[in-house]
Amino acid sequence: MRKSYWIIAAAATILASCANEKVLNHVQSSKEQTAIGFSTFSEKSTRSVTDRNSLEFYQNTFTVYASKKSVVDGKISEVFDGKATSLCTYDDGATSPNEWTYSPYRFWDKQASYNFIAVSPNPNIVKYTWDATATSLTEVGNDDFVTVSPYVLKGQNLQKNSTQAEIFKGFVEAPNNDVDIMTSGLVPRVAGANSEVDLTFKHILSKLNVTIAKAEILNGYAVYIRNLTITGLKDKGTYAESSYKLEKDANNTITTQISGWTPAVDDAAYKLSYNYSYDTEASAQGKALDEYNVTDNKTVPNYFIESLVMPQTVADDAVTLTLDYRIVSGSGVSAHTEDYTFEFDLQDAFGLFFDRYNYTLNFTITPTIIMFDADVADWTNESYNTTI
Image (cartoon, rainbow, N blue to C red; front, side, top):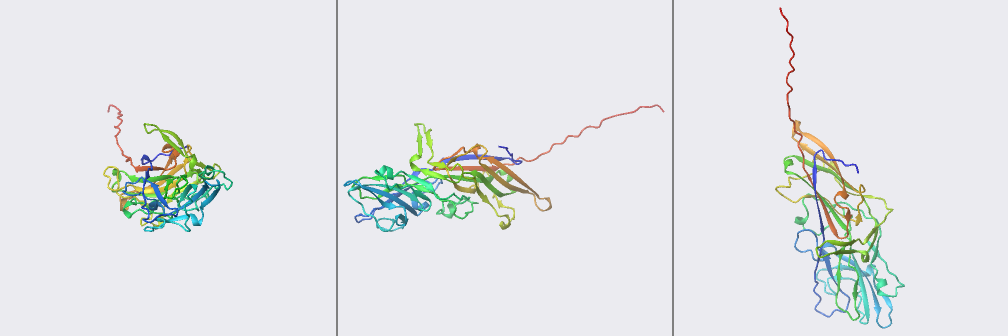
C-alpha cells in the first residue's frame, strides 16, 4: 500500500483484549416451576465497571429454538420455533416462570430429552437452520446461523444501557445501526429435567474502537477531527457456533483459532465511518479534541468509533483507515490553520478480527515542530591593487 506519513506525526498504541464470561444467577420463584424457564449468563464487558453480569444489561430480549426427543417412541418435535411465541423478554420482578417471560408457556415433558439454543436480541437478526427430517437431536441442533442482511456499521456507543459516567468523554452516540448479536450455543437437557435452562450467551462479532488524543505539546492549540473513515471490511457472511474453536496451552498461548464466521467472498466492501457535519459544529471546523494528553491523563481518550465488525482476516492494503484533522495555532491575524490527512493500513495493527475479541486503536497526535537554524555566509573578499 502507498504509505502516507504525517507531516505532524501520529503515534498509534494498539490494544487488543478478549471479552470474558461473567455469571448471573436468577432466583427461582418460591413455588414449584413446571413451565420451562430460563436463567441467563453473559460475557463480561472490557470496561472497568462493577456489574455487567446480566444479559439484560446488553439486551432485554432473546429468542429460543428447542426440540425434544421422546424416550417412549423416539419422536423428535419442535418446542420453540424461534418465532414470535419463542421471544423471551426481561421483566424485572416477574415470577412466572421467572424474569424472562414468554407466551404461551411450554411445559416440561418428563419423558423426553431436550436441546435448546438461543439468539439475542431477536429473531430478525439471524435464521436458525431447522431440519424437520432430522432423526437425532444432534442433527436438529446444528448451531448454524445465516445473516439476513448486510450490517450497517457506524461509530456509536454499543453499551446503550451505560450510565452517563460510563460513556467515554467526546463520544457521540449515532443511530442504533449495530446489533450486538449473541448466541447461547447448544444446551442439552436429559429426560426428566424440570429446572431452569441455563443459557450462556457469547458475543459472536468482533468489536473495533478508535480513540484519538493529542500530546502535551499541543495543549493550548486547537485540534479538530474532521473525518474518520475505515473502508474495505466485509459486511456479510454465515455463522456456525459449532465451527468456533479457541484453544490455548499451559502458557496461555493460542494453539487453535478457528472463527465461527465465513465471510461472503463476493460481497462488495463497505464503509465503517464516523463523520462530522462541519456546519453544525460550533466552530464549523469539526469535533475539537479537549486538553487530554498522554502525560497527565486528565481525562479518558476521545472515542470516535466504537463499532461491531464481522470477524474476518484483514489482507494487506485491503482495509484502510483515513483520518482528516486540523490544527489551529495562534489567534486573530496571527492564526495559522492547517489541514492534514493520515492513512493507516489496518493490517499493520490487526491482521485478524476474531469472534468475541475487542480491538482498540489509540492514536495520539504528536507533532514535530518545524524549526529553523541560520548561518551567515561570510563575505567573499576580492581586492584590486594599483599605483597612483
